[in-house]
Amino acid sequence: MMDVLYFAWVRERIGLPREKIETTAKTVAELVDELRAREDRYDLAFSDLTALRVAVDQTLTDFDASLDGVREVAFFPPMTGG
Amino acid sequence: MRISVQDAPFDLGKESTDFAQGHTDMGAIVTFTGVVRDLPDDPLKVMEIEHYPGMTESALRDMAQTAVARFSLGDVLVIHRYGPLYPGEMIMMVATAARHRKDAFDAAEFLMDYLKSRAPFWKREVTAKGADWVASKDEDEDALSRW
Image (cartoon, each protein chain N blue to C red):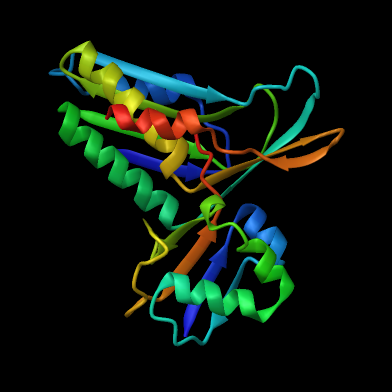
């Protein structure tokens, strides 16, 4: 069981801030494929991965990152702090 | 080192004064403050800042620790707000203390460059025309390459 979090417009498109997901995905990219296959709103949110960033257990990483032992994955657009 | 992620306003004068005290070996203190800027053609009603509780604090702490090591800082302060903010309100501040001014200025710039595109904050501008997430800028990403 994994916590999947969404922020900013990713949250708006998917329609919820977080959910628990049962997955056998081995990488972030595989998880994205699983989510996209679920429903159109996920497919739309993940249609352009270059517009998205991912954090695994609260550390920025890449879409080919492993999910082995991971508890929390977050998807969001490029950050706009400062 | 102090990192604060908060919705409440902060007192720039008090924070700066408190930060400046107790550093007898530090000859330079630089502070930077970010302010909500109004939009000239489409007046801003509110800027909403979302963040990733937990990751935000750890990302800011990592950046601050890197800055301390790289610029030999005696101390560093980062305050960043979230929630609804109005034009003219202070969004965030950094303060750096170093022996000499170049390290203090450079460290403040370094922190600002990283904060812009590596700290998990997202800005949304609400105007009479509607609401839009602020897009990241290529120049903000490019700014990291100088470090």
